[in-house]
Length: 126
Image (tube, rainbow, N blue to C red; front, side):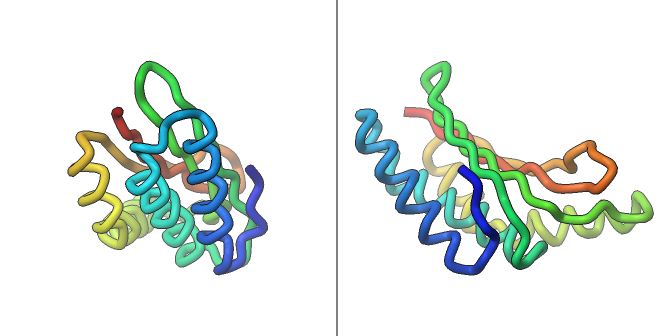
């Protein structure tokens, strides 16, 4: 799903994920998955406002994978990149708590393209 990048995208993404999970018999994951989706989109918006994002949702190996790609620019130094990653990680405390409570995992990593970008994800088990 391509999201245009506005602040309203968190609501669009939550609605899409909730509908998708309900239609595919995964409604027990809806509450945590929609919260995780909202947090991933919100963090991307905070760090890269008004830039397109790509949201991927996939059920595989008895786990739900929610992945968000944003266009956060590459940093000029490894130190700046690490500081930015730490700031973003700290801002995702609600995501961490929700995913941990569901026995899942989450994280983020730079996208290895010349222009930069960040891949953030949440993994939820049934």
